[in-house]
Length: 167
Image (cartoon, rainbow, N blue to C red; front, side, top):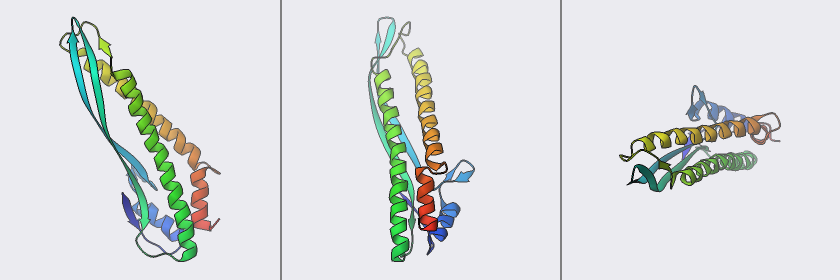
């Protein structure tokens, strides 16, 4: 998914990103990765326990990245293409982190058992707590990755400088 930006120079394009980029909390971002995760689960009462016998995820990852709405001069286009490829590669790392979280959830879900739960209610609460923990880890990993990428000299920092200053 793209959002339109405008400008004829690297500085103009970057300023347009700041004005039109996706809102992430109170600020705007260059790009953003979101996901929709739904599950099909099969809970089975077994004696006095409940077992999560199957868990199948349906995951949709959406990358939102900028795209110039007009034609760019060749030198600006070359810088833009480098920048855009780097931004998408950065977002794909976030996407892989989300996929890893889903694999982790699958790993601890299938076969998960709650004792003294013949109605399969307690297992859902326990699973929800584990899901929250896995999600918190994934979010922290994303923040840590962004901090490293955007630090002075980091990959995203260099990409921005390359777009804006032609470096």
